[in-house]
Amino acid sequence: MSAQIISGKEVAAEIRAALREEVTQLKEQGIHPGLAVILIGDDPASHSYVKGKEKACQEIGIYSEVIRREASITQEELLKMIEGYNKNPNIHGILVQLPLPKHISEKAVIDAISPEKDVDGFTPVNVGNMLIGDECYLPCTPHGIIELIKRSGREMEGKHAVVIGRSNIVGKPVAMLLLQENATVTIAHSRTQDLASITRQADILVVAVGRAELIRAEHVKPGAVVIDVGVNRNEVGKLVGDVHFESVKDVASFLTPVPGGVGPMTITMLMKNTVDAAKKLARTMQKQ
Ligand code: NAP
Image (cartoon, rainbow, N blue to C red):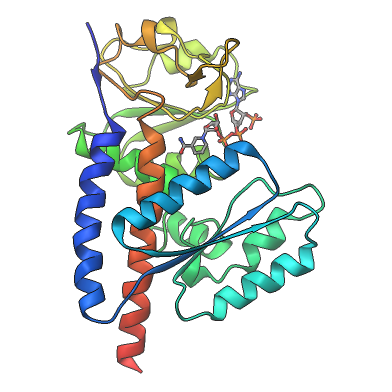
């Protein structure tokens, strides 16, 4: 069997085209979605992610402000900056690129973002609303994964989904969203014993570990849908996922590539959340 490759790039392009049209129409009504992206320090991967977000804003017609500051910025200065954007009517979404320098508390920074502008879906209010299935901004990578599975025509209801990884930004929320799609969900992590015996039960396997090519053919049930979230450099510096693509493609029925799988969906869901935030603010203003 050779897996069908789920192109996140193509699915993302479709969603972005629809968003571009929506933004054109919103602008005609005087609504101009705006995103502020705050980047602290000089981590090359973070700079590259932020460039991708800036480019996507341009493509869709979203106004963007990218604020780049040295790693020496104090937590107080950063919190003040966020407070300014919380009040700025031209900005509907605020994103602080993680990771932050060690002297700054990520929790304090995330907590400072107004939940109405938390287009990353990381604040406790949005996480709580997601958990109870209420209206919220869904975190971008998990939301992108669910959209990819849906748009590739795969059923989630009644399937056994195994998520490897339990981070707050990927593993836990994607498990919750799979549960809301009526999958039966198992979460595995670094203390899980006999990982392969669990992953081999998965109809849907989501891998968010951060270990280059950890998951190989022997971990995968024949015909499974495999979503590779990982972004790693292998020993020769090549960009690879958490899944060993060459061996798993002969066992899985659907597989996402790295690059070009989950990554483009993450940025696209950020754009969607920003457009939704602008629409929501406009509705609130109309009611007042
Ligand atoms: P993370 O915070 O480092 O979490 C990794 C998780 O994997 C942890 O829960 C850890 O378990 C588990 N783990 C580590 N080694 C394991 C092993 N040998 N067996 C089973 N579980 C193991 O990472 P993350 O932020 O979730 O990101 C995961 C990967 O996705 C990274 O490669 C990251 O770059 C990538 N990523 C991609 C996107 C995208 O848009 N494409 C977005 C976000 C992240 P413990 O909890 O027990 O430590």
